Length: 400
Image (cartoon, rainbow, N blue to C red; front, side):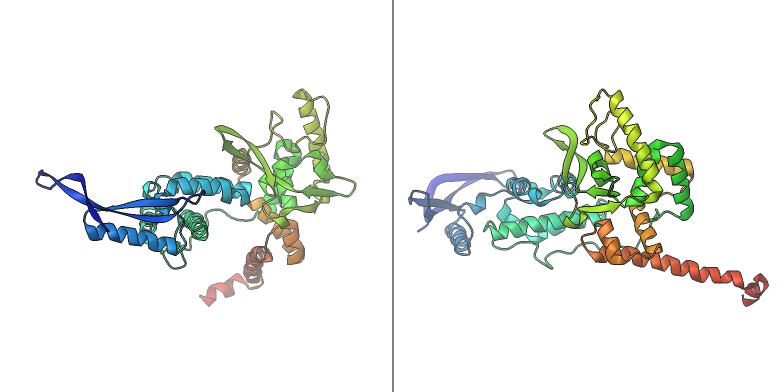
């Protein structure tokens, strides 16, 4: 039964008058501790019905399966613990790095961080997404943030921390992606390939780009290779790991992880086009290791190392590629286009989609299919355009 207490609540009205009134309190048994002792909890309200409603709501949530103390769980504490102890252990390095950026820029600054977990409703998250959109956050960034939060609340529901996830299907509306013409091309032309290849013959520092173009490796995969991963007897390159830089305990350092997907662990044949350049590269790397004071050469040494014989930083590789494109007057593109170019070379030479998917290390053949479809479409456009060469120009002009 609710009873009046002797404690008063002081508050100030709009006109500045300070008033006081009593509040009501009810107590209920909400469970037992590890020793079997009853756990008692107080519910306080501004009036009798308010206190009773708080008690009944709490007990109802316990009956629905929530654990005792659910009302004290904060979003900030629960989210941080879940990401570090549960979710991040399932992520590859690149995904973890991307999500850490999402957390820092799109979750930590939100009002969700100051809320109790049980208080968060779909509307709160919808408002947060709207604010991100109004601030100019890209559609993909908002959708990535949503994916992370949805995983978190699904976990909370499974662990009886919330009755129902506020991000069940259809609970919020996400911004739609707009079709925007790409500013950067996704493949290198035959002329581009020839220029990069010729530059690498004269400038050994450019060889890594030829290597990426003729193996289809991701930058992180190539950067993680060691000399033992290159086998000239079998003519194969073994891909089993990736490297990326992360800030851990305040230190920015390289972190080795397994490949992006299970299918990414693979062997790539060394093409005849790069075999000679690869051998030259290995010899130059061995000389560099000696200059760095590493007289005892090891097969564990990094294949593509920095000037100080450490792992390459992917960001620096991308910047080097941008500088090379400017120097060779290649239309602006990303270093990832070298991987797509490898796929385009496979398609142009009649390699099956299944074989190409395995060489690319795609988790799903549909990913390879999308690249192949794009390549075939461009080929069709060029084929139709070439028909104009057989029609006299005067006839073309008369058609208009």
